[in-house]
Length: 214
Image 1: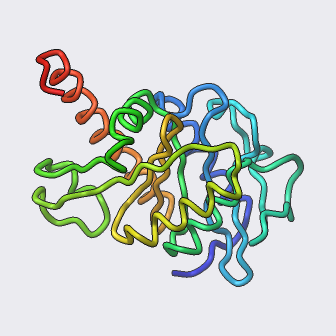
Image 2 (image 1 turned 45 degrees about the vertical axis):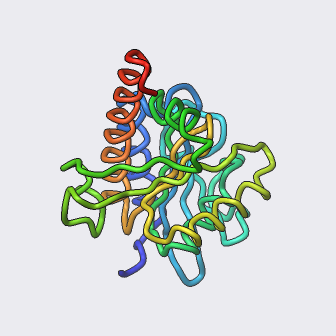
């Protein structure tokens, strides 16, 4: 896939994505961070600036960083989770990485943390994930501990992807969902699919708990 032609176009598209996910309730307040590859050689990543309401994000709030996370275009501080985005791109070959903080992904990440992840199967919506052709597919979404030590957390996320190379995302316990794609369109679709699956799972867990089954 060819590199994107210019940073400004990528920044504008990231703003559109951020506002869409905010409107869906998946990036409330200042939560969430979003990135897309501008070029591969050398690696340049467009990523949202830290501490901003994603519903009011503008192109000025998107920074360009290098492979070490240093800002090469724009002003301000990139997301604290920039190293995670960079490692996801390096490990998966993704061209876009999206991180959401929804109610359901937060609850499910807490409820299933002891199992190390949560599985989905038998649901038609699974076919919205890249490479999945049947509802019989089993998707395993790993759950990792949360931490404010982002250097440590980056290593954990990378190791988890290495152990589960077929996964389309990772949950940080009590924190949120990371997913990715070959471009922003695919990554955004993965957010929609996984958030749907997480809400279904969460509602089923709640019903089971009400019946004493959980």
